[in-house]
Image (cartoon, rainbow, N blue to C red; front, side):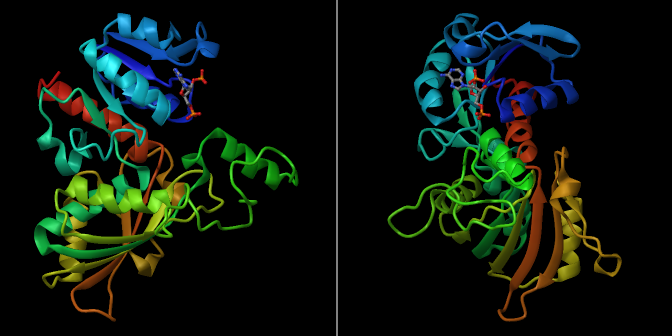
Amino acid sequence: MKIAVVGATGLVGTVMLKVLEERNFPLTELIPVASEKSVGKEITFKGKQFKVVNMETAIAMRPDIALFSAGGSTSLKYAPLFAEAGTTVIDNSSAWRMDPSKKLIVPEVNAYVLSIDDKIIANPNCSTIQMVVALKPLHDKYRIKRVVVSTYQSVTGTGVKAVEQMMNERKGILDGPMAYPYQIDLNVIPQIDVFESNGYTKEEMKMIKETRKIMGDESIRVTATTVRIPVMGGHSESVNIEFENDFDVADVKALMASTPGIILEDDIDNLKYPMPKDAHEKDEVFVGRIRRDESMPNTLNMWIVADNLRKGAATNAVQIAEFLVKKELI
Ligand code: A2P
């Protein structure tokens, strides 16, 4: 099993390598790929050194799977070239997510739609992934009518430059390189990605459209407000869900606790609820603060936290790869 990690020197690529190593992914050959400036750099994987190669070399090596996290335009250009060489691409960018001919996958929710013909598979947006893991079992049991989500997203979701901006600001350096239009430390920015003509940001529209596509149900109404906060890693979400059918809060908690990939942390007497610092480097989605919305019938409030670089990106991609291997779909 030859695995290429495209963007191996980047923030998500580095975590992909770590997750492949930790989960003991059955690979026989690792091909780390990055831009020309990184070619020849050494990457350590399972105690061995691997040299970074460029795209052309990687395509010629015909990997079985390529995990891509090198930006949207790189993916648009190169993912089809890998696919033509027989590689199955799992792409973390937004390039292919809403393409009707491509599957958008969160393994716990819809891996069953994958077939051997899917040569470019899209990994969803980080905030969408952690939300749908919790929504799916609830939709199956109570049927979701509408979701209102507000996010509290960390700076690692933007990349290295954003981490540097926040750390500079913490040291009092306010004229360093800016990833955001405003100071992020000691601040909250109600804008993630660019604005669209309807007044929503692209990130908000991703959450709306991707949720329906992954859940396979265009009737689910979703509205989102996505917000950047000065937290290093881990995204949090306040989610309000209106169901067609009524529920029992204790049953909802039991359902969350028994769903693979979810950890229920909901014990308010002991001040237990999910927080991003606790989700750090964890592969699961953490759920808590489950309570009835007393202002609306059949409606629930919950709080969802996950490591955005793990379940929100690298882990989800590796889990898709694991599914393909297990089901012999490559
Ligand atoms: P490099 O480090 O050589 O620039 P991040 O999202 O953290 O900025 O990382 C982006 C990743 O994608 C890096 O590993 C980067 O490599 C890689 N990358 C960017 N553009 C290309 C390209 N045209 N070909 C291959 N890798 C690319």
